[in-house]
Every structure is written in structure tokens, then in C-alpha cells.
Length: 124
Image (cartoon, rainbow, N blue to C red; front, side, top):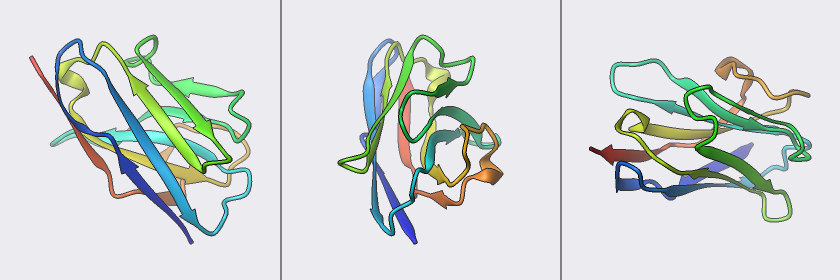
């Protein structure tokens, strides 16, 4: 099993920044695609960003393009999400996920491994 643990969430004012981390442990997920999803109260879980094993290919939801940056350090088995210019509508629980798929996918059902989530709250 692959274990994923998120960190870095918190409370921030609108316009501020946060950096989320996702540390992997346990069985190595060889060449796994990784992604960030979020879920706000009363809403479905939605794709935020994804990154290929090499880090060359990335994908972002339209709502975060230009503000969020996904990256990964395979040597450290860690993925990051730099979130800038945060808005109140970014408030949600953020989850990291890993998938053995070849390409980055926005579909949560294709991700086999999930973290417990970290709360991000953006005040206006």
C-alpha cells in the first residue's frame, strides 16, 4: 500500500499564499501520476491539479490556472501545491492522490491512493 499524508493547510486571508505538501510512504508507486483534489462543504470532490511522474506534464482546473503550481520531488517522494492569490472560494479540504495511470487524469475514480486531507480556509 501507498500511504499519503498532506500538510500545510491552514487559515489565510484572501490574496495570501499557502504551500501544501504530500508525502508518500510505504510501497513505491512506480511512475505514479499524482494529483490534488478538493472538496468544499456540500459540494463534490473536484480536480485541482495533476502531475506526471517526470513532472514534465501538468494539468490544472480552470479555476486555479495562473494561481496554483503543482510540483514533485521524486527523490523525497513528495508532491507540492503552491497556492497564491487565494480566494474565499478556494476554501475546502485538499486531498492528494496517486494513480498508476500513464497520463494525468481529472477523474478521481482513476486514483487508487488517497491522503486524509488538509483543511484550507480563506477568509475574505
